[in-house]
Length: 324
Image (tube, rainbow, N blue to C red; front, side):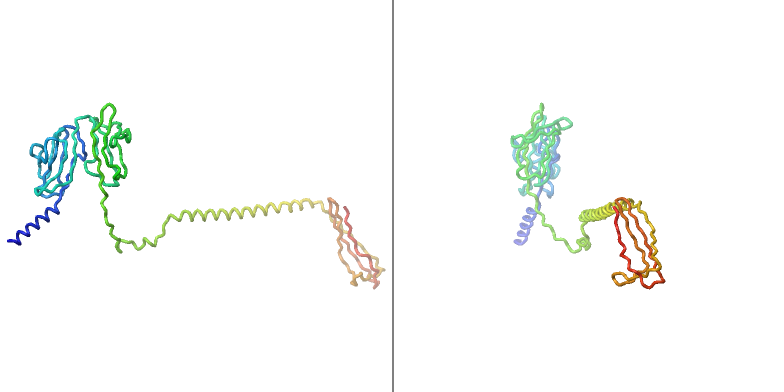
């Protein structure tokens, strides 16, 4: 009997510690207009969880006992009124409780639609200033009583929220009034432990494939190098062409050169003597250049020796004269 009682006690403790509930609300906003419907539900809960609330006129009032319609672990309010404003939560038969949600039922013409549950740190949050008209009008937004923004479309988005964004928010529409205040809560981002990658998940070709981002600069560098080489070759060719032009001009200036043929016949009676250098002077062609400032003349001299006489009187060397 003792063992059975101990087992039942341990089982009940285990159930209470593992079964927990989370209260959600639809629509997911902390403010609603009067006569609007609202639905509350205890999620992730086993049987025995009910919705309770604290209002200005009652405490720990269970759904179905004077307010709302109970449907298991859910509670529906078809037509809300200001007396439904208060704090709601889920509670089990053993006394365990869930998170709480503040709901405000407004009788005014302006409400602020903000998340009813705490938002996760790092997420984006949008606050909407709404009236009973179809489209949200331009509105001024306040945090803790201080004006923060003026939005023409009635929406204010907070990017990457953190703990500094927590506070009481409200909005104001010109000629319409302002909304009640709603608290924005930020919860810490849950930490997740990343598992190391397994060998099967790593692609064998992922490390061998080179990145493609370096192909563009390399290609551009090669193109620039080729252009520089072509430019250098072009400069060299142009310089060579310019250097050849003066030579062609000099050839054109020499078109007035004249050639003359001069034939000198020596007397056959006179012998041919050796020149000063001890060599016989034989027939030779001697060119004489007569050069003026404008004309250049070439002369050809032919010397015929006398075969009858062995000795030839040495003749003076041929003289070249330049006529200017």
